[in-house]
Length: 351
Image (cartoon, rainbow, N blue to C red):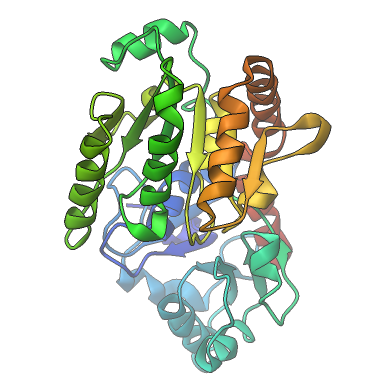
């Protein structure tokens, strides 16, 4: 438990179920603290290893921390903005409010009302910023480049995952459901693998609830194509960086995505990427002379097949794009860069 008197920034999490927002908080807080930010979390569903405060500690917010004019409350959901507005505007607490928006759609009137009363707004991508009607800072998500890194020995990395080291593998990782485009990936592989005997495919991720039937249909489709031993459904894994290190190519086939970290995770592992034009993918994956992959239109199977084939059939292109992706993530998308940029927003508010 953190001492509220020594906390300058509060990161609330008012949703008990694990989500992308919760995962972002869990990953960022230790890095922000390592960079010198006095930050603590508030709310359920977070690891005990994170410094936290109690709801009772909010009574101390009438007094600013030593050497500061204000504390910062960093909301990421509507339900976290509203209490901060009440504390700042009605109770006159020494508080400034930051909000991170990841939405890529027009905001409701209620959301606009809340966002319009923020002291700072952070957009997670340029696409997100385009839907905001207030000044904002664009800070793209980063990833842990110490956790996601290339394999020292690619053949050994494949053997460690129980797959054939002599094969090349193209992967699709994430929840198994239509929104994530898993069916587009499977259909691409059914089209591409029969005439490419040196390649196989890996689908890593979990299907839940109504999506289990969707996954079973995909497995039946694979079996009918005679590819059950070459399109592998490996389920959900906690050691997902090890699975990236078993890949030669990654496909992100989503029909919709809020941001999407999987292309960055692949690039940080030295794996080239074919991704649809959703979420922040077009801002992450580079084309041109420093190509790290290819962006294709969403929900366009033929475009995905053609872009994937171009990488599968060109070893030199894959190698170059993998090297470029590794350099791009290290230079522009390490999580330390994201944490530092957010900390600078806090400093601006506290001054």
